[in-house]
Structure formats: C-alpha cells, structure tokens
Length: 366
Ligand SMILES: Cc1cc2nc3c(=O)[nH]c(=O)nc-3n(C[C@H](O)[C@H](O)[C@H](O)COP(=O)(O)O)c2cc1C
Image 1 (cartoon, rainbow, N blue to C red):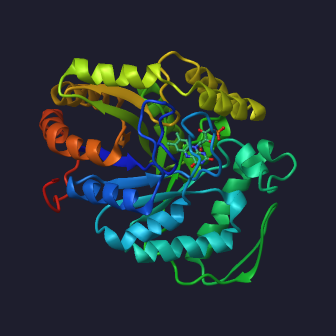
Image 2 (cartoon, rainbow, N blue to C red):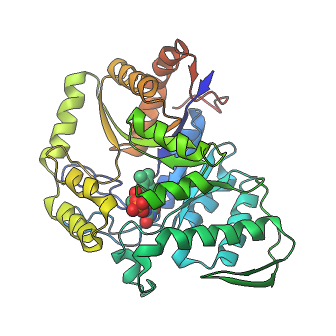
C-alpha cells in the first residue's frame, strides 16, 4: 500500500499565495492559522508547512505586506494539535546552529516529536540583504554553508559535547540539551532546484519539493539512493473548488484576469537581481498568461468529482509521496475539500492501492 501524505501550505504572508486584486485581502494572523490547523486535523491530513518570508512585494494587493515568523507560529500551534506534523522554515544565515539546535529541540519537545524544519538558503537574497547579513560571495557557497550548519546542528542533537572547526563554524566542547524527541533528528525538508540544492537534499533531507514530472521525482529518488538514503518527493497544488466545473473555471479565470501585475513585476525584479540559474524557469513561469500567484502550486480546478479524478490521476502518474494544498479561502475551502472531495479521492485511490488521510478523524469537519 503506497501512502501519500497530504498537508496545507500555510499562508505565512498577506493574501496567501495569490497575487490578484480579485481575491480576499487578509493578513496571516494566529487565529487564521489556528482555524486552518483545526480543520486539517479534523479531516485527517498529515502536516502543516510554513515558509519563512521576510519582505513583501507590494502592488495594489499588498502582496505579503505582513509575514509571520514560522517557527513561532508552529510552536504556538503545537499544543493545540495532537497529530499533525509541523514543518517550519529556517534560514541558516539567520541563526547560529547552536541557537537553532536548541530552538528546534524545544519546539520538537512542545509538539511531542512532531516538528521538522525546511532548510533554505534564500529565495531572494534581497530579503536577507535588507538585514545586512549576506556575506561576500554567499550565492556561490549557499549550500556549502547550509550543509555545514546542519551538520553542526546534528552533532549537537546527538553528542553530549561537540568540538568542531569548520569553514564557517567553530564549536568548543559545546553542549546542547535537551536533545530533540525525534530520533535521530527532527525531519528535514528542502526545496532547492539547483544542482547544489538537489545534492543537499540527497544528503540530508527526508522530504524534497519538486514539480509534478515523474522524471523529476525519479531523479530525486535516485540521487538520494546513490547516498544510501530515501527521500520523499513532495509538491504543491492550488485547489479551486466549484459546484460545477464551469463555476470553478470561472473562479480561476476571474482571479487570473485581475492579476496584480505590479506585485508580479516586483517579485520578478527581485529574482532577476540574484540572476540565479535555478530561477530562469521561475521567472518565465511568473510571466505565463495563467499566472495567479507565487508558490501557490499547480492549479487544479473543478467540481468535487472532477477535482478528485484529477488529483487521483496526478498522484498515480507522478509517483509523488506528498502534496500540500493552497486555496483562495483557506478555512472554507479546506472544509469543502474535506467533506466533498476527500472521500471521493480516498475511494478512487484505494483502487490503486494508495492511501491518503488515513489518520483517525478527530471529528467531522463542520
Ligand atoms: C514549497 C517551497 C517552499 C519554499 N520555501 C522557502 C522559504 O521559506 N524561504 C526561502 O528562502 N526559500 C524557499 N523556497 C525556495 C527554495 O528553498 C529554493 O531556494 C528555490 O527553489 C531555488 O533553488 P536553489 O536554492 O537551489 O537555487 C521554497 C521553495 C518551495 C518549492
């Protein structure tokens, strides 16, 4: 039986992932995140995932004008949830690994061993440059830095005292207790698209984000296998529900037609400033006529029957191990997904020996 984990890509920034003047304007409050977590747990999903964003991109929609800090939010939700895994993003440049090791152990402890981290090296360097923390030449050694940072954290999580002299960090008989509850370490997630990013995932990660192409999924698994490791390959999708297919299509088209072009252009400018090879696809993707946002994931539109059918086909064909969802209205649409789509999807996937959302439901989603 193949298990596919389902999660929510939490809206850490204002307006979630959509850059449109049509969609609701809102901020990423604790109450919003608590309500999403409650529904996710009620309908039996597996995890919540928070990015770490440090600036917005303006425009008429005020895209990401507020962004919450993800570890604090995951920590606040840990005692309010019982089963969901909680993944929060951390950027090695912003925390000494001994400080990070202790923060992560603490949240892992609060959550009863349900906490994991997404290790990133800077989506756009502008976010970090505004703080004056980017060392000279950093873009050439981002993943070398992250590799050493994580190796140091792992030492501190597993040794009584650590002494280490590296290129970036020094430990002198350093102690870090308590250790995390998760053994050997809290789960590691990553999402690098470059060769160095994929190599980091092969060496360290339990989960790696890729697109939906079966070839990419396979390539990532093979890279991890070459290191004697297994990595679960995951992706993001944007679900647009409708009572009918036509209604869902109309909703998507309205969001797209009212695109906040200024916010999109601001984001493209920020990517082009870094001029990273791994971003060529990303900026051309943002310029495509069907763009509705950033990070929202592959759009899937339809009535509950169509949505379940499309998701089933994508899961079967891609070989993916997990999907995290984004929505227009996270609480309302996640409830709709739980009551109208998920039961159909479960029975379709069961015919392929695939199981999703199999945790005992806490209560029926209202
Ligand atoms: C689902 C997902 C979440 C991401 N979250 C963050 C994040 O929170 N912060 C960040 O700086 N980058 C984030 N990224 C960007 C990646 O970590 C990575 O930098 C990007 O895919 C470019 O690849 P590269 O770093 O190998 O050049 C995310 C990417 C994906 C697909």
